Image (spheres, rainbow, N blue to C red):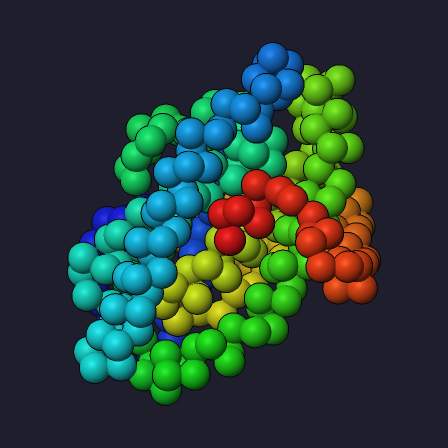
Length: 261
């Protein structure tokens, strides 16, 4: 069940915990012109996401109270938050140079679009919903460091992709793992899933993935080189955060991701 489709159900005992899935079809080549103008081409999407983020904040509050009472998100709330999550992830995947094809202005992308998000509505633990703000802090720190680190070095990744006409495989997989973790955090924070975010360093290569395979990121098994890139993102993100916290007020780094957040 992808993006905002609705198929409510209960979790059966013994069934492995379902983590939201990110499918990314790796492009063979990227057009250098679209890489060169990537941020400019995405400007309309950033405007749309700004207003969607405001609406999503309201829907999360509505969903939080509803989940405390019902033990799940109401269908309209789930559909909107899941659709917005998928749309935001597609925009970020394009901005982070994972795909070359510009995302459509839609919650439901065409079947051949190379980025898809899968979430499955299910019952929520009311106690976990009640303390969701506290529970998500560790994952918030991890995803913030990883994404901030990626964007702090974003010019380097952009230049490499522009010169080569593609993103090198280790960098692609590390970037996909970072985006997937960010997506899973958003899904958890929005109460789209009870599953705590996992998989920043990829999936277990020996694990049988219950939902099968379908793209370069399902499952996402990272090599040692991929993992070193992820560590680099975290270290640079930490250094950037420390630098910003000690800098005079008003020196906060600008960036599209910060606007979306």
